[in-house]
Image (cartoon, rainbow, N blue to C red; front, side, top):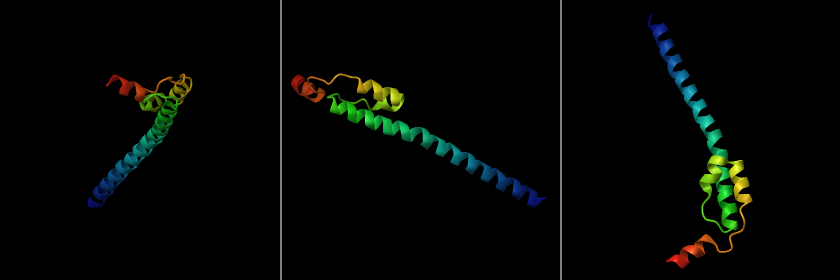
Length: 86
């Protein structure tokens, strides 16, 4: 009787750890490309004279990168505009 109960508890704990590990890995598989895409989009936008755009790349991934890639080069950078307004 006790052996069966211990085996059931061990199986339940082991099963929960396995599910948690799978969820953690799948979350990492989804977040890592989004973070990389967000960083690339932000760097591309900065080279074109725009400020931000991390979240555009994070949520839209490849489409966000394309969007920023097709933005025209800013004639006056965002940072210079902020300095002029102050």
